[in-house]
Image (tube, rainbow over all chains, first blue to last red):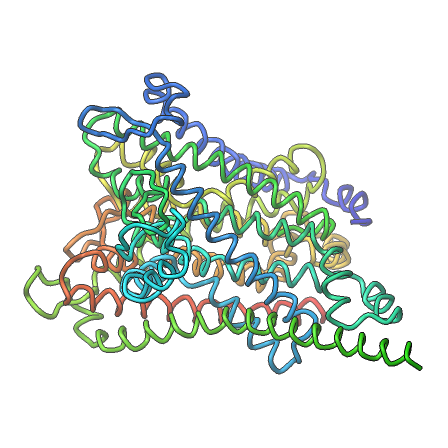
Length: 315
Length: 289
């Protein structure tokens, strides 16, 4: 960073070849910026007919009826929020605990292979999770996990009703599996970056290693860890294929976690090529626009938090 | 004495809590790893049975006819990834060079912000964009529009990494080249970028690993095909899309092939990730030397 001013003086472009080079570099960067701006503009343009026709009521209406051309996003917003919440609650606990273990307690011979495995988990394609969810997790939910949960918690509306196997809870669990690696990997980096002095001071005052981890290291790392969770939440919100395969695809709002539902992303995936009227297509694109805006806000928030801990280094 | 005994008991209690806590943390780490092993195990066991020579080289058979394969999807994956890489590398590299040379000020900062925004955009929204600019105006699905979507997905990682890689080439290297009379252009292209190359290739491998199993944008860009399609202006079969279509189909034969396709995808992703790791090690060594 300190070399920057000198750098700029060196990087001045004078000769014709340099000018040409600079022009190409500028052109590439401008093209890159245009692509991103274009993405936003196209989404707005595509959803404009729907925005004009339905207005803000689009977000609060729960009818999704292609035949009468009445479209409202509420069931999908509900499904997206619920699956993502289930996912982040499960993934945050497991991921943060795993990160604490990997950063502060694991012996090298165990920590490195475990970290490696968990990082590989992050690279497994979404469609593979979906396949596994559809053929393994959903039947398991229908025959074993669902009835067991209902047996214990069936008196609450959350766990009542018929169990289809596919539904909100299955979607949430698949999402949790997909974002645990994100939470773990970033949280571990943040925890490792906490200065040794803090740990040593805490141990010198007589804390056990566990007390140090819980009461000194975690509070010091909390902003970064929170950022990791929000980043993972952003991934969960936009995740498409795996959820589409296990959510049940029904645009309804139900109090039961076993009920089939729909998410913003999966309704686009399922219905976009079948949309027969232009207002139908436009309504689907507006769902995409909502998804785009929400994940943009969530991601910006997450990155701000992670930077504030890691300094200038970016994620 | 009594006080010291109670203190000892207190310490013992705290140690037990600590032990339990570490146990919980260990369990969580193990759960994460075991989940991967279970998923991996299923895909390997179910997928290995489906993979044979026909599966890799044949066209899909019609419903009800046993046999057939995903050869056209594998070919399509290569074509679409190749095109996407050919578009993403120049744009990503040029933007990376720009950011590393003119790193400060509102414009580069704005560009970095845009790049971060793009990295968080759900792939399905990027698919909608590709549809809006390349499918809707031409009124037909095409492999090229899928490449375009993949390019958008690959760009943020390429931009960010090539910026950092070029920036981490020591300033003395560039100054040495300039002192020998090279123009800035030649110094950048012939000295700085080759030094940063291993890191850039690492990023490229990771970017390809990220998109190779990506399915959502393909639904309304590449769309899929039953034939050996090599024309990027036509709808094309893609492996990830075939896995999805076969998985949600009601035919056991197709479902078995979906597992086979999933195994191929995981294999490709793991090979790419391992390759990226090896490349990164080389990059580190190159910078130390």
